[in-house]
Every structure is written in C-alpha cells, then in structure tokens.
Image 1 (cartoon, helix red, strand yellow):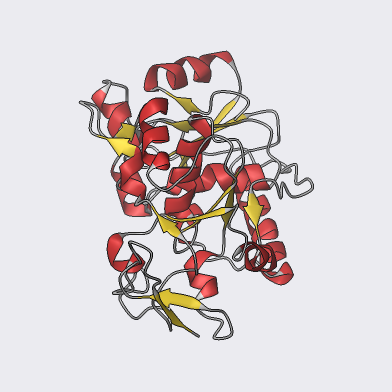
Image 2: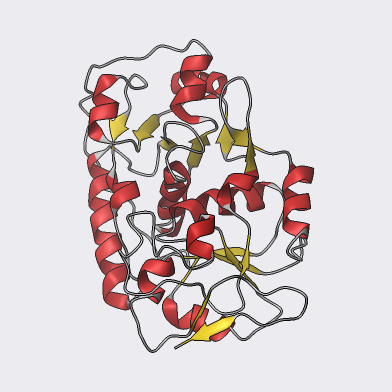
Length: 294
C-alpha cells in the first residue's frame, strides 16, 4: 500500500472534521440499527454479495456497487471509511469493502482498525439515528485488475510454483470437511485449489484491550514465512467469497508484501465447476502428495 489504510478511532474522529467523509457500516441491518457511528450508512451487501469472475459477473458487480456507493454519497471527493464489528467477527467484511472500492477505482479509502468495537472502547459517540446521505454520481473508472484476478487467470497460475496460492479459510474447509461457512454441503464439492498453502485468516490478528487488531509487520511476515512467503513472493489469496482473504490481503500489504492479489470468486466459484481439479483430505507433509479429485 502506498499510504496508510488502517486508521484509529481518534484519527477517524479528526478526519470527519477536516475533510468530506462517508462512513460505511458493513454489519447486518439489525445490529446497525441498535447503534452505529454517527453519520454512518449501512451497506451490508458488501459482505453478502456473491460474485463470479466471469465477464458478466464482474459487470453485474461493478454496476451494483457503483449504484450502492453512489447512493451513499461517494462522488470521489469524499474519503470512504469502512468498518465492521471487529476485525475477527465480520469475516473480513470491512476489508472486502476496501477491495471492492479499490477494484472500482475509488481514490480515497480507509478502514477503521478494530471496527465498531474499537470505536466504542475508545469512548467515541454512537447513535441510532439514521442518516440521510446525499446521493452522488459514483466515479466508476476502469477496473483495478491489480488487486483482483479472475477464474481464467487463477487457472493459469495453479501450475506456477513461483506464485503462492494462499488459502485463508477456516481449518474445516481447508481439510475438506466443509465446503463453506454457510454449511458443510453449501457447495457441490469440498477441497482446495491444487498446490495451495494455508494460513487461517485469524492468524493475522491478535487480542488487544480494544479488541482484535492486525499483528505488527514483523509478526505478519513471520506467519508468512511458515509457508515460504517473503516480501518478494507473488501471492494470490482466496477463501470462500473473498471476505476473509480481503482481511489477509490488507494485512499482507500493510506488512510490505509487494505482489498480493485476490481471487475474488474463490471457492464459491471454483468448486462449482466440475472440470476444475481439487485436492481433498489432509494436506501433504514430508514430501507426500495430497489426494487429488477431479
């Protein structure tokens, strides 16, 4: 990242008074209604939207979120600040918001580090009052393909041993006991992309008095080193639908990993194409190869 993306509650409070800001709450509507940061608009679609990386799927996603973000008041002049409940309870949804906005070419994006939990822990004000954002024309520009890869691209990278395919899903998904966080059989197949390595997304965070926060740069690099990732290693991330992997993407970029992209369709897309190979069962160790399935 070329500039700081994660901001503290105090920095967000100051930002609100110094420049035009649109705060985006990604939590579910009921939780949002019970209390939120003053002025925040609720866009839970950031988390719930299931995308495919086909040209049609990408275009539908672009149109949908350009409309939603425009209705929230994003014209390109405002800084968008995205938050969730805490960094480990929203499955990475604030970071998914960062990725979506980056992909759409939005120029100014921040993430509230620690989310709503950190905001309240800092004694900042909350409200149940619903804002009335002024709709704007969202500045939809050319897609930033520097942050996302599509199905055809990831297929071409599977056999390239110089590119790390990093699976960030929960352990039951990694070992093919479950197909998704939505249920063991939500997808038609369980498994992982062939040759992938695994760091569960939780490992990028640690507890603090204000709630879970990303680890320090050196700690994140130490986690990456366990699967052979250095700051120079090209990395493609995936999870189930791109949220948890977005969390890891932000962590890796903040730690200085230079070439990090996200396969946004992730397992939700890969598993539904029976022509694509998968690995199942326990991951390999000591030179033994994993079980392969068509």
